[in-house]
Amino acid sequence: MIFSIASVALLAGCSDSGADTDGDGIITAEEVATEINNVALEPGEWENRVEIVDVSLEGLPEGAPAGMMDRMKGTVTTTKSCITPEQAENPGANFFAAQEETNCEVKKFNMSGGSVSSEMVCTNMGGAPGNMTLAMDGQYGSGDYDMTMTMNGGANGMQMNMTAKSSGKRIGECPAG
Image (tube, helix red, strand yellow):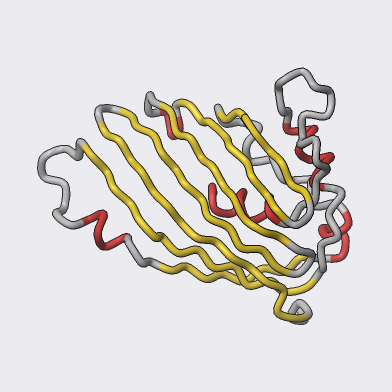
């Protein structure tokens, strides 16, 4: 879920002032969606790639599989998706639909001149106590994006740190059907 949110976020184009358009210090889902709708996104088939660059988890309970985190490093997931002309015209419409029922708060969201930087803090993810800070920095265009994401946080005596690279590009027209 986090990777898909970050990937969609990269396809947006925002002003230099960031998403906090009313200046109240709080970035709402509506403010981010409004900024995302400024995008010049190309409709068509997109290929999205996420690679886990580094991951560590401290405080694992006894009996946890040895080397579990090491096996995640270098894992690459590639997916394809179709962005319709309607979705390309209104990319912010469903951007935060999945987030409306979570405990996440956007702390920073700036996109300008092909660069993006954002930070979000989530509490009690999956019902477990604790906080997770999610940040992304990268580059975007109407037909591609490339970013680095970091996730840091903990719950129940465990601390997780993860770095991932995400990229995507338009690869052609959507398949028929």
